[in-house]
Image 1: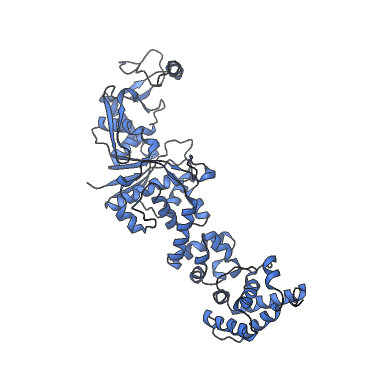
Image 2: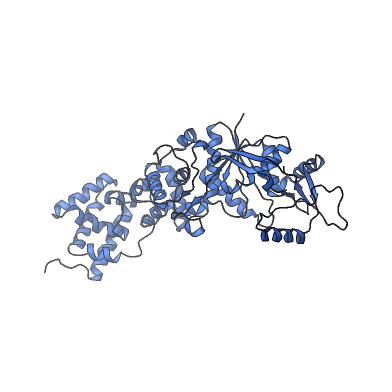
Length: 475
């Protein structure tokens, strides 16, 4: 048997973190078993489904690297097929037309609730042989078994038993002929040959209904694995404020897709105490039998830790491609500065996100608008003007502009002026970057280039002398 999984989002919003994890688990299971992964867009809710949401889902999948072997398929393109299966169920007696009005059903529900009973359809039209006089357009209901139990051997929850008497005769087509969710899912899973359905445990109650429809169609139900929900870091249901964000929001916040995927796989699945997994390791190790049956909670600190790990250990060329996008959002053309791979090498150790890396790298592309007040007060004093002028003079005569040569010049000036290295490097850093933080000064100047470095040193000396900050440290 070829394993075949699917991810079937409804395009009524963005691809959120819970949906992304479901997609990842389904993708990993198919990849581990050499199977097929299908993307199916369940867009039958025409009022809420939008093209924008479809694009958001496709963009999120692409950013995470979750490629699909088949699809995307759209349910709205399969209405003729749904009609064909509905007719088959009606013809074979597994479904029937229900003419009950909305008013009758509302009254029935109120009576049942008053008796503290579970609201359910009472089967009034179950054995009708002809429509009642004056009846309107009927819905179609599935004739659910009324006795015994439906058993679901769930790969996460174990065996779950449902009393058939509690399942109700669910509506599988509305009065306008449009099919309902539980029915379209069944037809699609059957036609696509889905062998394993991995989805959120909010769908667990749908499993017996869908399994019974499949049995009525003569099809063995797929293997189900219902995964627990994701909670916020306080153990409460996710909201937009606490983490139920679009996957692309994580991109916007400066996370690498590898870090997000690694983070997602650990939300409910583990392999010993291992925290960091390459994609190949995930594929070779992942198994739905090892998914935790209890809910997982978000841990933003762990995501930041993972992201910093991937920033430091990934191929700089890969990180650079993502950094270029973030620089672009800040109005920077990456071609107007140092090579991005070299910049990543210089900044990775001191960056937790790509947003932080991009912001801390702006001075490589744009002239600083001014100097950090605290840093200037501390470093543009005493002999700072003399130090910067001497460094500028020494650097101007440098033929080989690389970090090693620059380091030799700065170190030589420090020895010449009998100053500690920091007393020379830090004023240079503020002069060229505008602030107190940058990569090592030799790397920083090498990346800036000779002309830019000399120009900014000149500007800093002029600033110190004009502002009167060139003062003696003597009492």
